[in-house]
Length: 238
Image (cartoon, rainbow, N blue to C red):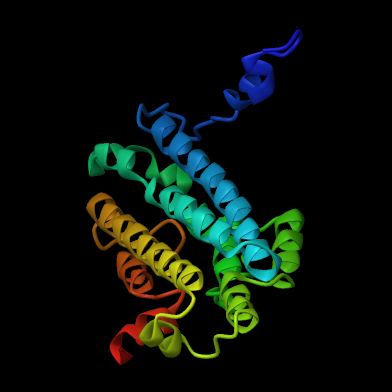
């Protein structure tokens, strides 16, 4: 590294390692893992938003092939998931869960931004009392931007493709079809991520209501939702 540039300085390691502040008075061993995993998830969401913004830009004005490449990276990011959380037993989680009451993954503003960026958000999820003014401003700004689905539709129009079934049935425009396949794969990755989350939550708390006020059945129900149902439907039509 150059003179005066250090690994710790570039990555702000000193600041980073001070951000883990478990809440339980008992200093439960597994709580640090819980905090770090969710902090890492927020960093992955930040990177995912960075990539999705670039995909949208490429679809609107740039290289469709580059859009497909960045979508493949986005799929990898989603696939990182919560597997380490599975090493925590229900007993371990119960020891500090009470200290988390009131806080929930439902309050992740960045995850709501991801849903907006994909074009599959639900308006009722965007008014969380826990959102800060900065988070609300970010969400409001993102709602004004083109999302992945609208950008894909614009790319189709620009390429002279007016119907998804036509694109698949005729075999025209391989590059655009590659993008649609990566979007389908991303949709699948999100379904698996949500399902994995639901299974993990059920193992930890059974049928109890979560810290955010919803139960495991809600998580399973949301796992069945699709961001791009049109891309799934076209397979039935072929």
